[in-house]
Length: 242
Image: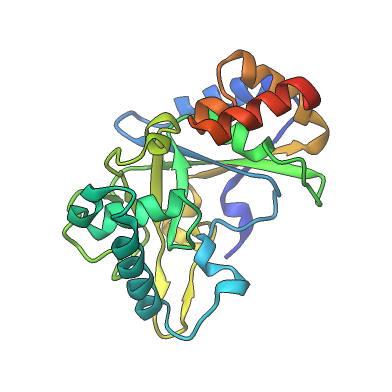
């Protein structure tokens, strides 16, 4: 797959991002869902966490089923309602709490994606990015389908089963898994999606400026992680790193 089939846009400031974003959005014809995702390294693939090298196993599907059953069994202690959740909601909760799954996080809010791109000080390439994805017919409406048996990449609109999903305007992509090759396929390598992807690339040097603008607009660690951990991280940033 030629990577030039998706749009790449160089961004030099917060204002320019908003301007370019507006022009890109206008190109769609309405009735579409626009999703965004931030990467702290611009060369990262659009792949779920479980597809990373350190999590590679011989049979993803079998292991994922075992993991979700174990998560459900033990998570009931924290939320009694979990015993009645579908596998789709379970895997969404597990994903938001750091468990490797086949879901990839997206948001309806491009400023939330921008914050996630710059939240961490760590950056090795000198560039960060925000991906934009315009989609429509890939949205999953029937959550009775098997979460571990999808013949294409689908978009999953989760129930608001955690506060993080709510405040982050969270959606997910459930990625195409090739059983014969035992691997997941990056979204940017799937021909039916590439022309609906845009990659906004930022120099790492803009991090301080962008995080300050986002904080003024109410996008920060505490608003996106509304718990004591999020509050502590926000106060630390505001007083020592801002």
